[in-house]
Amino acid sequence: MAVGVLALQGSFNEHIAALRRIGARGVEIRKAEQLQNVTSLIIPGGESTTMAKLAELNNLFPALREFVKMGKPVWGTCAGLIFLADRATGQKIGGQELIGGLDCTVHRNFFGSQIQSFEADLLVPEIVLKEGGPPSFRGVFIRAPAILEVGPEVEVLADVPYPSSKIIIQEQEDAGSPKKAIVAVKQGNILATAFHPELTADTRWHSYFLKMTTEVDEASSSIIIPYGGQ
Ligand code: GLN
Image (cartoon, rainbow, N blue to C red; front, side):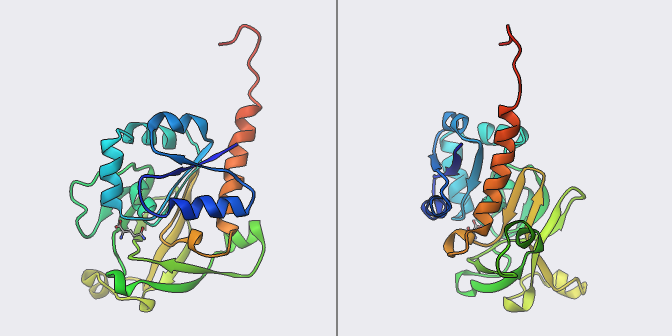
């Protein structure tokens, strides 16, 4: 069983290293056909416009969309989350191709520019329940997006109060909207985080995703093909 890591740009090496720390094998994915060799896929953080351009150049979008639709586990971190969103707003989003599949609206660079990057302790009961360990996670937010609204199938795993960063959406302020931004969600086979667990020593997110991967692997290997089957 192998976990693919989209290796066009961004923090793919860090994800592969985190997987190695928990005894799992991460495989670099650069071509559509390589997706056939992996059970699940991590789409790393980086720069989503650049990543989209490289994915387009390598004709990866149809295979990536197919992978998500087949119900294979996919985890997007930061730019990877933007890639997986059905809808995106914010800086320079026009024309940028997305994989989609995750029923949410994501706002790119929600917390501001590079110098407004920050770290925050996050409470994520779902992961603590499954993985144990200390009650909070160090969230590393680098020019991070935030999720503004989610569809009914989406489970919110974590949010972060705005004041730890700059509020950039004036209309939201004016409307007196909640002062919390959604930063981690799960919708069936899709996991998405606005922050970078691969840049910390805490491997619980990777273990959690590996469990999602194992479940799919076990389910597919238990299919019995009768004699004469193709
Ligand atoms: N701001 C970046 C983008 O819009 C994402 C940043 C990240 O992945 N750390 O693509």
